[in-house]
Each structure stands twice: as structure tokens, then as C-alpha cells.
Length: 292
Image (spheres, rainbow, N blue to C red):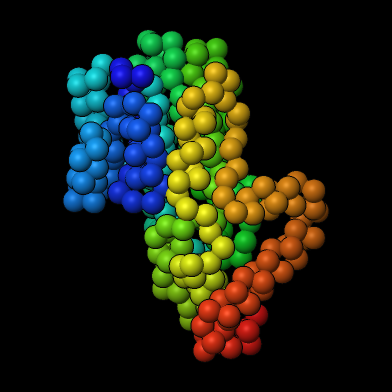
């Protein structure tokens, strides 16, 4: 494995950091990519190469791939993990923010994939691992733009899988459920800033409080890193790997239930999570209980 090379985006914390460490432990030469170099510099201590690049900066992505090929000569695995959640009512979210959500979650992913594919084609091998979400198959209130990006990642991945298979390149989707990272709290802040006042305020208060439960029913980032490891080890990887607490149950419910029944399922699930919040913070719980 000593000559195998992996590139992991969004590697400054959480899923990306855990994945970079996992692939390094497997023997890969790993390039960890993030906007903030100070957050990824400590990864050099375990032999990971930190590289600063903004996933929406085309010139930075071109330079990244040139650097990887100049230093290592190949790219075997690309883990497209960089992304964020922009939550708020569709009515409230400015279109500039909606476009930025797509730039980060979809177009950045697509552009970096475009840049590594010529080398993978020359090798006759490679694996693209796109970190999507169960949010690419389900929906929830006040998450319209985020879910739209993840639905796009799912469709893009399916098409790429078919067109790249004859060239020896696999495309895999990882679908995390609830994962204990910085992401939920940041998404909750976005939600309150966008829809915390006005006609959607009650729904926003409920959603943000649920997202901010740091010790709630979430799995550690390592479960996603382990799924990536399975995907890159497998001779014939699965097309999708749902991981994290309740991910399979929720996806199964979406496949089985009609749309309006699934809507009720989501609302029931949100109320259940609200009760979890209530048990952890009595004051906040009373507020959420009244609004739920």
C-alpha cells in the first residue's frame, strides 16, 4: 500500500480528519485538504501532508492536484468530504447563500473530481468516495437548500458511477446519519440567523435546539472513516454505505412510506428529539415542548 495516494477534503476536523487518519493508518500517502492550514498542520505528526485549499477556489484546486501528482505521481482515492449545512426556510435564505451552498457541497466536489480523473484514467484505476448524507434521500423542514445539494450529490454520483466503471474507476457514496461533529451546532446557528425571527421562528427554535445537542443520539466520526476504509478495501465496493445511528432505519422508512406519511414520520421524530433535549436542559426543554 506504500505507493497508494489518497486526497481527503474537509480534513480539519470531524469526518474528514478521522478519514485522513484512518487512510494513513492503512498505509496510504494522504493529502489532507482544508481552508485553515492551522487546523490540519497537526496531522503532519502522523505522516499526513496538510494542504491549504478552498474547495470553491478553482486555481487552488488546480494547484492541489498539480502538487499531488508532482510529489506522488498518482491519485488512487479521492474522498470528497468538504461541505456545510445552510439551514433556514427557503423563503428566508438569500439566493447568494443558496448558491454558496451549491458551490461548496456540489460544484467544489465536482471540480476536484474532474481534476483527478485524467490521472485515474491513465492509471486505469481509482476510487471516488463522495460523503453525502441520509439527507440526500430524505427531507426535513427548513433544510431545503442543504437537502437539494445532497440530492444533487447522489444523482451526480450515480451518473459518474456508470460512466466511469468501464474505465476502472469506482464511485461510492457514504450516507452518514447523525454524527457527533461541529457540523450540527454550526448548522443550528445558520438556522437561527436565517429564520430565527418571523413566521418560521418556532420551527427554527425547535430545529436549532435539536441540532445543538452535543451529546445527543449521534455516532462518532470514526464510523464514517471505517465505512470509507471498507469502500476503498473492497474489490467490488457497494454503491452506498449508510452509517451512523438510525441511518438505515430512516432510509428504509423513506423507501417504504408514501410522501405525506413520511412527512408525519419526520415530524414525530423531531418531537421525539425535542423530548431528548428537554431531559437535558429543563428550561430549554419547556420552551421546545410548548413550541413542538
